[in-house]
Length: 234
Ligand code: NDP
Image: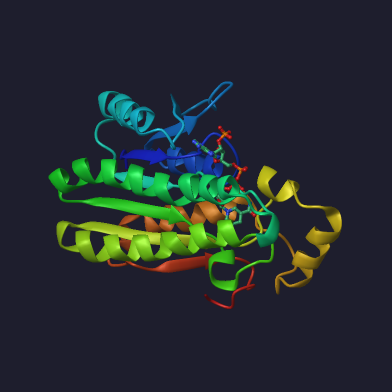
C-alpha cells in the first residue's frame, strides 16, 4: 500500500496519530502545519486551510512529491467555546470557517484527482458533540453536524465514481484540545462515558485507517462513532 494520503492538521493530536498509522502501513503521507517544524517521517506542507491559495499550493506540492491525493482526511479543527449570549460573530464564523468551510475547500480540491483516477477515499473528522450538542459549543457542534450532511452529500454525488465519503465522530480524546478543559468539566464529561476514560488519538486513527482501507470499499455515507459509548452508536 503506497497511496498518496493527505491529513489536514496532521502535525499533532489526532491528526498526527492518523498520519503515523497510515505511514506505518506504507502510505505516502502529507500533513499540514502552520508553524514550527512538521513531524518527522511525513511530508509537511505549510498551509492554513482557511486560505484558498495556501490550500491550492499545498495540493500542488503533494501532487508533485506524492502524486494526486487518493485518501483525504479532513481532520483540522478548532474550538472557541463560550455561551451563546457571549459568542461573537467572529467566534462563530472562525469555527465554521476552519471546521466546515475549509473541509469543503480541501474536499473540492481533492476531488479533481480522485475523479480522474475514478477512486478515492474521503474521511471527515466530526465529533460526538454533532449529535448530542454541548452547552458552550454551539458554534463547534454546528460545524461538526454540518460535516455529516456535507460528507453524506458527497457520498451520493461521488459514489458512482468509486469515491467514498465517511465520517469519524470521536468522543473526548486526550490531545491539546481536551487539555484546554477545566478539571471539574473534565470530571463531568468522564462521568458520562460508559467506558470511563478518554480516547487515545490512536483509537481514532484506527477507525480512519479502516475507512480508508480496501476492506471498507463498500462503506460510504457512514458515521463511525469512536466515543467510549457516549453517543450509544450515534
Ligand atoms: P488539536 O487542538 O490537538 O489539533 C488541532 C489540529 O488542527 C492542529 O494540527 C492544528 O494545527 C490544526 N488546525 C487548526 N486550525 C487550522 C488551520 N486553520 N489550518 C491548518 N491546520 C489547522 O486537536 P485534536 O487533535 O484533538 O482534534 C483533531 C480533530 O478531532 C478536530 O477536528 C477536532 O474537532 C476533532 N475532535 C477532537 C476531540 C477531542 O476531544 N480532542 C473530540 C472530537 C473531535 P496547528 O498545530 O498549526 O495549530
